[in-house]
Image (cartoon, rainbow, N blue to C red):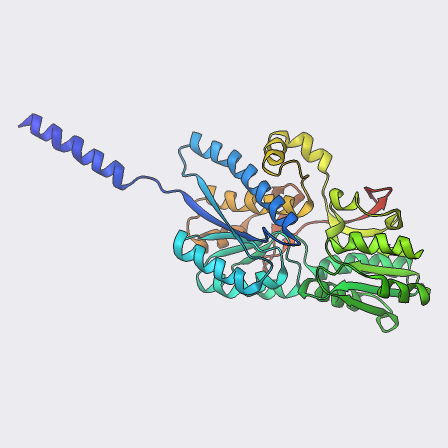
Length: 366
């Protein structure tokens, strides 16, 4: 009788342990992995994988379920991004998703995230509209409104009496940054504005007109197109004071700029790659293996900031999207790779934005 009871107890214990096996935490990440902007999608992917490896080692030691990342390529297309998010929600039952890079894609995905109570946290979408995209939408990069106010303040204080032109990419990001800048300067009616299509390669017509008009200050808003802008400005002999956007806070990109970019001033969060290499040596070594030697950029660092915040929410006991959202809003003094931060009531990061200058292919504090 006692022996039979023993067998029943063992079988019951085995059945309980199998049916209550701890599940992995499924997390999605949607960014561009092919095409023109894929460099940033791949560096973000590498950064998330490297940091997740480290966190999972700690979680295993503590007996916690590991984080399982699933990546989707949005191809910089809003419809593709929306379908990717729906797929992750249905197939992986995710409660958290990182992405997207493009403001247009993030805004398109926002309604899906809010309807399904899934936290969506972007490391690169700067459009002002994201501040009002819903309670489940967060970002760790600066809003265009905040970024623009910093560079506009510099213009008002130092360059206001000089003629000004704006060259910007014609998408939600470029238009949002342009409009926020114009609202913050003292003489917006005197500005000449030139828009270009994302991925454009020839800027000679725009630059020739700026040179002909003898424009003294040019505010450039773009992505990797800026490499071609500076190269062609040098070819045309255009000399002016350049102002730039946070996208320039990327040592790899800046190293490709021509000398015409010297003295360019741009805003950005604290980002010291040399310090990251030293302070986070284990992470950096893992990252470089995943990225095949492509160096860490500021937007990948923003992605790590997002993961650090989400992981702290998980450690605090949050499991559902709603619980994770509530934890993110409550957090203070999150120790990120780009400085200490928290989230405001709109899910925007509260952190210091600095001014930097380009000198001989290097980024230095202004």
